[in-house]
Image (cartoon, rainbow, N blue to C red; front, top):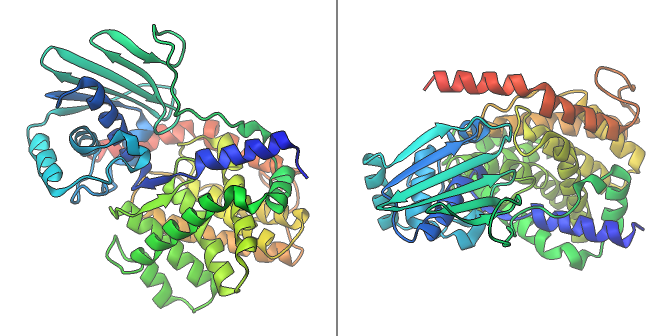
Length: 430
């Protein structure tokens, strides 16, 4: 049994990470910031400047913004949030947008009231929204997490400064407070084995309902290339095909502008989908009881967060790898394997696909998820047959936790120049 401190901390991590969000989380972060800034400004802005870090630019460029009528881009996300967003709804900030709002947004976009500037910042998730109307101005800053507002200034008066330089004592309630440094494989498994299901039931039921609902919507083929249907109709009707098709379909619908919310993980809807949908499909196909699925989902969600704490929210390293690795290990957990076999699944996955790059959020993320799940399911079967790659084969280390740390180092530090080159290529092609 884990200590009470670890238990409460892990519950806190799940509560902070498993939240509902509409659409790709980066344009939603922009819409949220714009909605908050508009509230402070107290009137419709006449001019907006959106300063965005490179990873925000990369992840907003190609996705359709939900509830926007097919709009894409930073300007659209900011303006729609400013004129129609409800910041009280957090990552579902655009859920109340109506046709009148969409029309008004398009009119303001035609007037080009929003200017975008690349923010040269070492913080990969960094946004500054400046709004102007008459003599009034507001500057709002978001750092590190999608709705973590760290500073608000109105007419040169500091209203909020969570980093200690402001006049106000108010602090943001959007920051992450649970300690991710306490995560480790042994405690994650022990927690998943022993957690009181009632402490996590609501979060897990929301994840199952929301993420499967959008998966079935994606299977209609209305979004992107219809990858889910293509996988289902092309490959044999086995477990892997069912998992890959539904998981990819959910991602494609989300990237393609579907306004259904998903329960995210580590700030990403795709990661929330990839670490949950395969387990749900597997459990239902095998007719496993809910409590087995729920414990596996606890394990998979925490393992995803554990991997991402080393990489960061945004990176040149594709988050589908981390979440699919967690899904594969979650399936190994779900069938009752011990920790040594689970570690083999992790190692087998990370020996295979640690090199998939993130070139921004878009419908082809669904294909990367499908490929990553293929690798993770192979890793699961290898592990269940007692097979795993030897330590120090490539980047593999003596322990799975050390391998996770090394992969994170590659994603966060080693791929910084890769990230810059990806952004350069994307900006030059505009």
